[in-house]
Length: 89
Ligand SMILES: [Zn+2]
Image 1 (cartoon, rainbow, N blue to C red):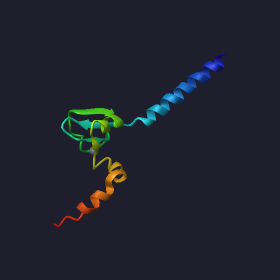
Image 2 (cartoon, rainbow, N blue to C red):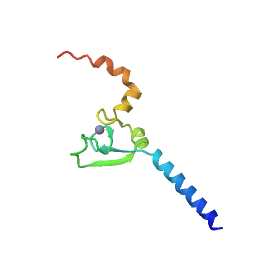
Image 3 (tube, rainbow, N blue to C red):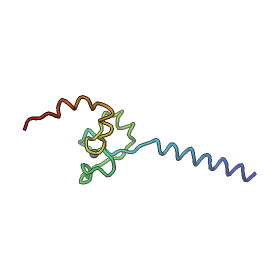
């Protein structure tokens, strides 16, 4: 009888752990239009940094930061940036 409770408890813990891993927290600044990772250097010195779910940030129109979310940009519209890469200097 106690075993049954244990199994249910462990199952609940496992499920909540899975849900937690799926949700990714990102950080946005009040005036910024990008979402950042917690350790991004671009938000290190900012005071009004808001933590929110990545999905929510995208739904509200935020895009991936070029510094800390490079992989998101490459996965999304990496091809567009190749043309802009050739800047004469
Ligand atoms: Zn960033």
